[in-house]
Amino acid sequence: MIKTPMENVNGELYIDGVSTIKLVEEYGTPLYVISEKRIRENYRRLFDAFQKRYTKVRILYSAKANTNISVLKILKSEGAWIDAVSPGEIYISLEAGFLPSQILYTGTSVSEWEIEYALEKGVTINIDSLSQIKKMLKKKTPSTISVRINTEVGAGHHEYTITATKASKFGVDEKTALKIYDMAKKAGVRNFGIHMHIGSGIMEVTPFIKSTEKLLETAKKVQEELGIIFSFIDLGGGIGVPYKPEEKEVDIEDFASKLVEFFKGKVEDLSLGQPELWLEPGRYLVADACILLTKVNVIKRTPYRIFAGVDAGFNTLIRPAMYGSYHHMVVANKLKEEPAEKYDIVGPLCESGDILAKDRLLPILSEGDVLAILNAGAYGYSMSSQYNSRPRPAEILVMNGRYEIVRERETFQDLMRGQRVASWLKA
Ligand code: LLP
Image 1: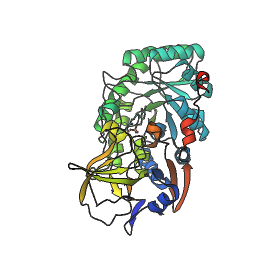
Image 2: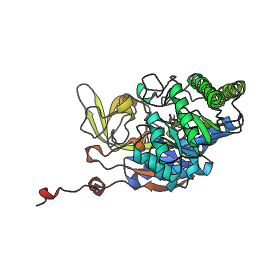
Image 3: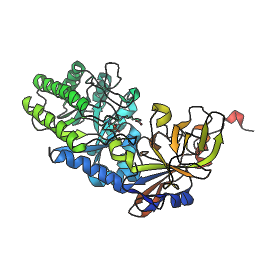
Image 4: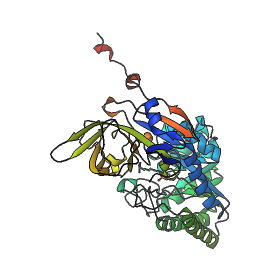
């Protein structure tokens, strides 16, 4: 699973020309290391696959996967727009230099102040409920809106990452969508989009096609009943990446060809005009562009298991604990050594569920070894926490032999930030 720009240099893991061991010596662990080159490659591969088949394609990076501002700036320079799901993501995207018109805000359980914030910043709002449009129109009529449709065709790597089913909290049904578009049009909205996002970590194109079919049929209904011609149709994010060595990458040429062919055909059949096709990938762009380096603190042999206690836990990377996700690991300083023993890789938190990997076959580990946890770029740092009062790790960006810290390691002061002692508790 060590692939470009990672390489094995005399048994040591390098990433785009930089020794991970050197980085650990300089910055400590746990440490997230991000490859700019890989992000750019991922973006270009995806964009080219779609753009050569449909010129009016736009990629909105789903910022929730990784909101490091350098990552946002890299994707901005590639031409990406932003899928933001909170005012905080709008804020940081604006800080990164995106224009308000390049940001689509897809909230859920959206509060009054969040609507006001989005309106005030002038980003495009993707409506998630009837309640939201009513509240929004009382404040202001924006020039553009979009509506998130629940197509009831969901998919994803875990039940928690499926976002379009009958029981799902996201989006609205067709009848509600008609009401929303009607209200918006009557209020003076002039430019419209329609949106779906069916789930995350999807390795096949079929669910996208099925859901696109339903989405386009809803678009047609809206067009017929309200005379709305859509300027963009957003098929959401969700394209998966392989996490296990035996898994194959999504063949993105084949994926794009099947999806675009279907989209084009259906748009033409239904006479939906010439809408832009939008995509909202998060994971696909950043997952394999980042590794998490963690040091082995303790080797503990019990009568039943061999534990390697490392300094990253589910405070650092929650995916294994939360979804049972597999993340491949290599021993960054022992790449030449053969796998020899099965370890449970566990973190420093006082929780039995603080397990990064179970029964993982690795070379014989010693205390002080450095594990590189692969595919940590999506939903890694962005889902980290200070649980057990452990400051969050640092992030390093590497590019062509250069490296720089792009987020400082938190300190104990960060644990206290914003906390105040109640006046009656002061001595
Ligand atoms: N668009 C919307 C509206 C979304 O909610 C999401 C992800 C995306 C796009 C991007 O999905 P992606 O291309 O990254 O699959 N924490 C989970 C994933 C949750 C995804 C939430 N929404 C995980 O670590 O697997």
